[in-house]
Image 1 (spheres, rainbow, N blue to C red):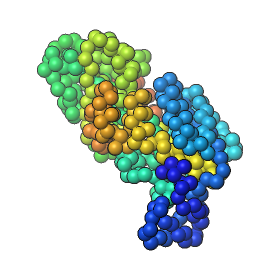
Image 2: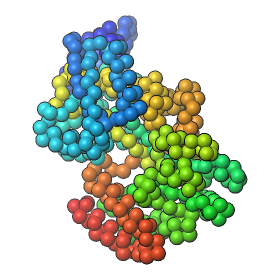
Image 3: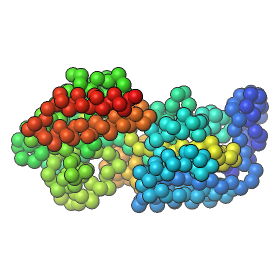
Image 4: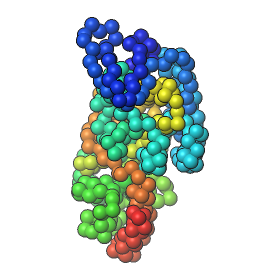
Length: 428
């Protein structure tokens, strides 16, 4: 429901601890129902301004500005000020610095959930559950948001954010090469290794690689039924198997890591690797790298579950009740079906709504990812949203790169034991 729609509906406040009479719908003749809710404002009676911190750039920022301008045209009583914080790193640092002075915080911010651990502990965030569930303010078909994305917003039984620029990993492959070798995209880790080996044996081209070593390690373990948490024994058989799987491929020549290339889209475009696992949001970079050298194919990640990535939008409770209502209306607009179709087409990020993913305009947009996006997001997982897990996640990449960059002297056991000792400090 837009802010202007709210103005035309029954107007009142919902007070904490008191029953409020709510009409079933605008202009409805049905009997009223009684609900109880936390204290939230359900109408705006005067103009409201609020600030949104983000770290979008290029086409992403252009589309964010376009959508925000459209929202303000449709909701003239609300003014949204976008403030670009340059990069994720700068945004995180600014958030961390200002959490000790909440009045300096914006109403809304883009953030990864683990950045907000201290904000949750210090009670700096707005629980969006009452807004989402309220019969007047409420979110239109909240269940339409992809379940894997919704799961990542719920912490300790409360909804602290709305999914925004989301992505997952997919398999990018040289379709021209695959057709020449009569290959099909692999669907399991076992098939991936075999297909990569075939490419290497037949052409001398490295078969495959993973952009993110941390993603690879945690995803491999997750598909083995293990999560990155204090209970995980990183010297155990599943962890060793995850390392050995990649190490075997490197030693035999059919796998590689990104290394100094940082991302594998460059080597992929230069026909130095036949396929790789990377973010769906990298489509524009792949198009530039490949040009017209060969046809690009894309398939779901070759495992049952795959990591969901990207940021959500959080609301700080240092804002006024009027700002919170206005900001929630803005969040609903940004994540509406129409907005998410535009956002997905323009930026390469995944629409967060199933209805947007299923829309003909998105599927027929020309995006390589769009036709497979439903299958690619069927089973998403996320790591625990805390700083310790984030530290353990990042350290996994350091350990794996140290092992895989020295395949002649890997000493897997020694490196994993070192990782285990580091985790003792991280989890404490």
